[in-house]
Image (cartoon, rainbow, N blue to C red; front, side):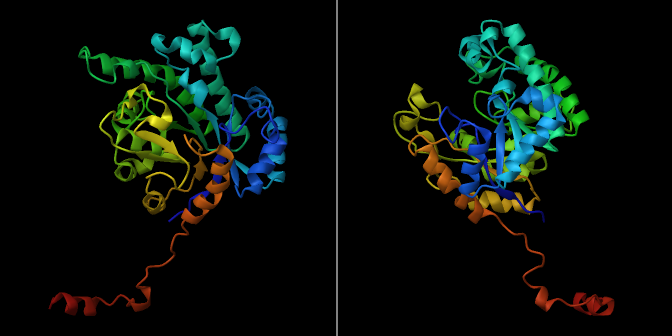
Amino acid sequence: MKQIKGPAIFLAQFINDEAPFNNLVDICQWASNLGYKAIQMPTSNPEIFDLEKAAQSQDYCDEVTSIIAQAGLTISELSTHLQGQLVAVHPAYDEMFDNFAPEHLRGDPTNRTQWANDQLMLAAKASRNLGLKTHVTFSGALLWHTFYPWPQRPQGLVEQGFAELAARWLPILDYFDEMGVDVCYELHPGEDLHDGVTFERFLAATNNHPRVNILYDPSHFVLQQLDYLAFIDIYHSRIKAFHVKDAEFNANGKSGIYGGYQSWQDRPGRFRSLGDGQVDFNGIFSKLTQYGFDGWAVLEWECCIKDSEQGAKEGAPFIQQHLITPTAKAFDDFSAMATDTQRNKRILGIN
């Protein structure tokens, strides 16, 4: 069996205008001091990481790698969650998602989509320049406004929606394939890829493209009330990235999985810091190790109660204590017997 790597940390929720979170050198040293061994790098903050330069310049990539290595870290994956979302946006969400794009593209969905496509292509090239084999992102959504079937969806709508989503992603996936990098979609409510069934629909629509893979995040399955351990049994061959994020679902008599338009603290389903929620991480790390997952265990902090810096500080030892060194032998090897065909016949009662 292979071993999960970690702990790593996703920087997206920590970058801001104040030190040590406003430059690459300091934020890397901060992460290293907490015990992290890798960073998952967002690509929408040029002051931290310039995606265009990384795609165009090996020297820049070498410089970034050196800065990160000096802190005792490496890069687990690049992330294009914000840009990937913009590959497919239903017009109902245009204004809300405009904030994910550069200011000059707001109100211009056609060119915004083209920009998002270009960003993914840059990420593929940058990943190769950095020697990375996996990339994490969102799928975007054309069908999410129809997720609850009332009024009844017209026949063929879902199939047509996934065909269009696949058509938008196939050139990107082909380029990632050329670069030798897997695309790992975070299955997330609000995206057309948000559970196992929708992942299968997309996989089929892309003709089982080898680069279509999964960023496994159990927190989103808790909020959907999906069996996140059985999910690993079913889809382990496509799980190539892992967000370690906790969550809880507290059933009550007023609202359910849809949340009643309430704030995160008031919803039945809430994201929590590691160890504060209901996710069975012992089960998850055991199953992923059993199936040979050898990617990074990456903390994604999103908690509606606990401060982010406390969550980050507690996250590294939490992940470390869940990492499993795979056994090199069976527990009962001490009683093993050499192969003996005649003895086996006697045991089996065969003459």
